Image (cartoon, one colour):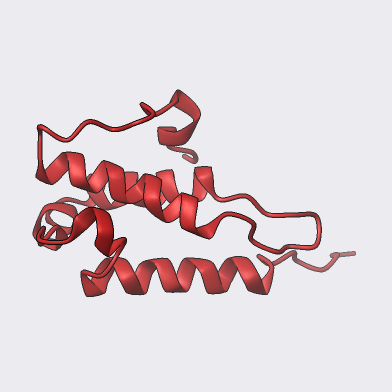
Length: 106
């Protein structure tokens, strides 16, 4: 007998949708990325886009009820990685920890 399939909580799905919208629209963290048209850099290769989503989802925190707790922090950390790709002189503070940039899956 098959049991029900678990889905991401609605708040997490909404957070991912908005992140993808801001990213594709060129409006992710305007304070940090203002003046950088990062889309050509991020969308040029699948691995860049993959890393952006990995950072966002690794940093994203969700409470037991499925509510997103730190959407702004997750967006900011992803934006820092993007800024570094566009501006090699940009210094990421604090530096990324290994868990933040880890790629999961097959």
